[in-house]
Image (cartoon, rainbow, N blue to C red; front, side, top):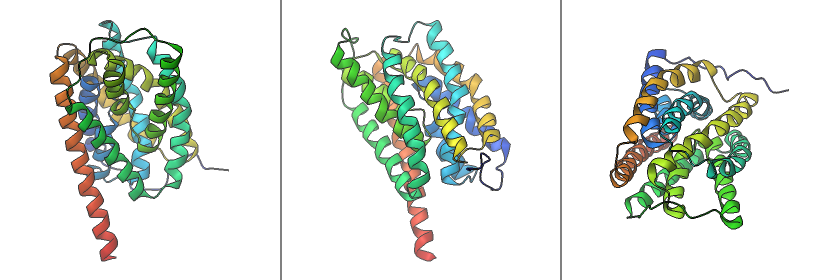
Amino acid sequence: MANAAAPTTTRPDMRIVALVGLAAGALGGLFGVGGGLIIVPGLVLVAKVERRLAHGTSLAATLPIALASLSTYVVHGSVDWAVAPLMAIGTVTGAVAGTKLLTILPKRTITIVFIVTVLATAVRLLLATEATGRDNLTAWSGVLLVVIGLATGTLSGLLGIGGGVVMVPVMVVLFGMVPVIAKGTSVAVIVPTSIMGTLSNRSNANVDLKVAAVAGGSGVVSAIAGGVIADGISPGVANLMFAFLLLFVAGTQILTLRSDHDEVAVG
């Protein structure tokens, strides 16, 4: 029977974890993501948390941040409640599959998948896209949303991200949704995804709930502030800012990948 407790490890400085959460919350609210893009590299590079544990803990920490972000988007009417449930069907199922992969795949492979996902998203956002609002949903578009959700949920469970890094660009590029509504819809989907993924990670001993609570709790206030700011940013500027954020995150992870390679070579 699997032990539900987190693996034995040196607990990081909670002050650092709180700062990571503040940064993640601000960016989560601003860009409609759960904050895992910042929490994962923050826990790995700054707080020195083991990578698998960092990914699982990050997904748990995204829940309070996503809930806080969602509150601001709901107030401003920036959630597409027809799209959110369809994507959530896929993400919840995919999150379980992703957390299983997290226990199987080598750390280096997980890092590479994270980098490729982030870079591909950044490049696509830098390409000009006109977002005028989505068309009416059809049976085929509904199925497509579920499939996209499945892929997103799998990446969420594996990489410890809420999934907004995938969902927001997809909704803007493929469905023509206005960025602020895509972000609000994204955080609505992230909530059930993070719950399901965290339950699965907990059973696999891949989450430190205390660290997750500190990071997620610290990000709540900054997430609300970020969501308010996001409502006043033009779509073009929002896409550009998001793309450069992703490029920065990918750069930090590439440095981590090279560092791990050097350690193996020396060893």
